[in-house]
Image (tube, rainbow, N blue to C red):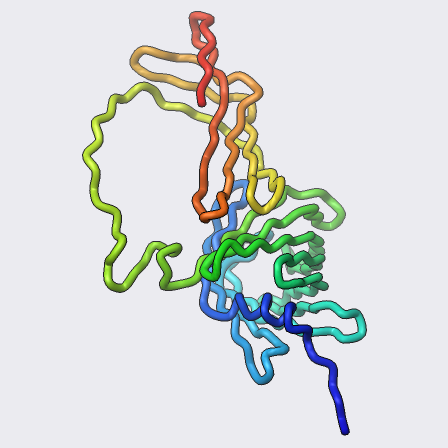
Length: 253
């Protein structure tokens, strides 16, 4: 009798949550990148194929990447291997259970006629069957530390994506009465991914406010705390201090 090794059921169940079509949104320090990604299982479902159409985070060029996740019986881990149509590659080793998923990834980009190597640790967190987040930590490009990133995967055609065929659940318009108080300019540092549920954006020097009855500058420390709650709601907690031109201090929350 011939036997063969197979992927553990808990690992297979975790991988199969990804099967389908997704919209991928990644917050970079200077822009937000939106991509389309499709995961597909074949055969005995021990291998997941995927294709990403979007943008290279390092070079900014449009790109298409094709890859697979598969089980390595020798190392008892999931291995990922992918290629882009621009000559780039990605390889990773993942530690995956039913409830958690971390991996170490090496990506090679072709930039300005030379190859650039990026290493990063990734942490996946599944909020629901239609949404999960990916935190990129400890990023290094050619040995130089780079800001972390946060990616959000939303399954296409779901309420989380903001579309629903029958139109139910569509927000109703609300009449609001507002007064213009001021314009606030707050230059932000790259995101700090504390964990999959908390991202912090520190405010750099140079922030200011200006309005009909107020003018001043932002004082450190100041930051935006973006929390992802268990029900998938995102809550923004903003805290800072304004020093007006006449010397008054105003706490903002």
